[in-house]
Image (cartoon, rainbow over all chains, first blue to last red; front, side, top):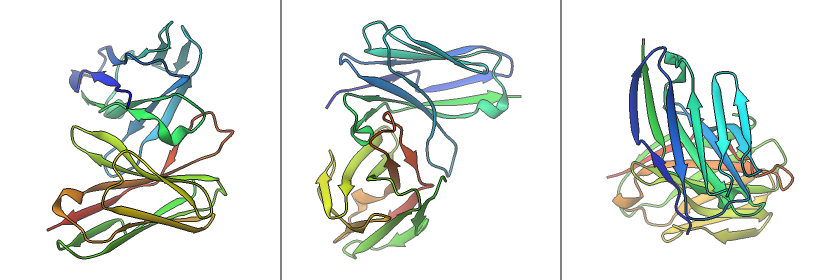
Length: 112
Length: 113
């Protein structure tokens, strides 16, 4: 089983601050997904990255896939309380999404 | 939840009793999955299905069985629940053409006393 290490595990910041969450592995992935999960709900897909070096932007969120396709980062600019949640990365080695390897997640709290 | 319904949403049971969790989808997706989510362990795959009556084991399948008699339903059964199976269980679906995108249900919280 390939491991995906997320850091930090917990992050508590003030509204307006910037933050970066990291997802690292020694394995190469064909694609990597970022999900966001709120309490009492299932994870919801934010983005999929498939090409080494790829950068995708979703409003204030910027996602980057490492050149070697082993790592990824999520950067949030000017965080808002609505960004609070559990952020999960998942790496897939083939087209079967369900056999993806999930990181343990980063719990983000944005205080007003 | 994009056409995925899990039931029950909450269940408390005693050690040794059988438990069945149900996942129902209206998306006609071929692939269905059961995960468990525990603090410090993230999401771990229990079993998955490629189609009707076509299932396989995930990384944490011991103590669990599944069945898929219809495209829309995927059942997870704990034959004799143990306290270590206290967890939140998520069903997910994906389409073979869906570029590794998983759509999750809202989860079923199981407590085994």
